[in-house]
Length: 178
Ligand code: IMP
Ligand code: MG
Image (cartoon, rainbow, N blue to C red; front, side, top):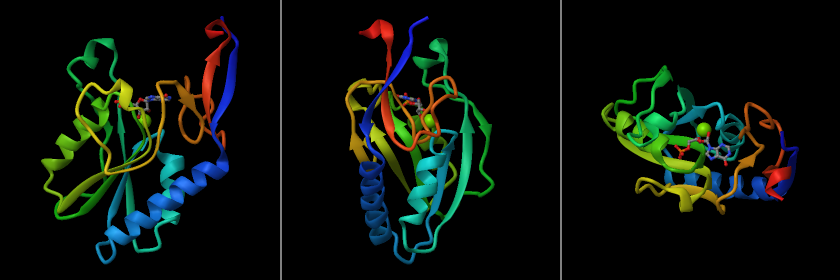
């Protein structure tokens, strides 16, 4: 049983500045389009809540819940939808919002599923990008921070459902990691 230790990676102020930059870029690109933000539960909730308030144009939002793949499903990239959207995506300007892109398998699956629903446009907005662990080719259209290969928590991101409410992002270290 290693003791857990947190090392701040991105402060509340740094996150706020990153979210503000994303919000301004999205507002410029989507002016007059009434985009539909789709948050991936549960990790993206905190980010989405701040992001929509940084976008000074009319928007709507919805949520989808997916199962995280186990070791067996990782290679196939198969993800199960546990709670689907309330909106049909037909002819919508959809912005898929994730907390972090790691292997890219979750977003890859969701993008394929969403494309089949015939949106007018479909883009990805993430707070964090960990490109070193990618298993499929995927580059977010909007991203605030590229981070190294560390396990991070806070601002919606969890470790066994813990730490989601931290107002900053920290690297989770186990005592045994040194
Ligand atoms: P994927 O590997 O890109 O499919 O990432 C899927 C999900 O894994 C993300 O949406 C997060 O919920 C979770 N995840 C990936 N990296 C981290 C991390 O460093 N901390 C917490 N959750 C993570
Ligand atoms: Mg997630």
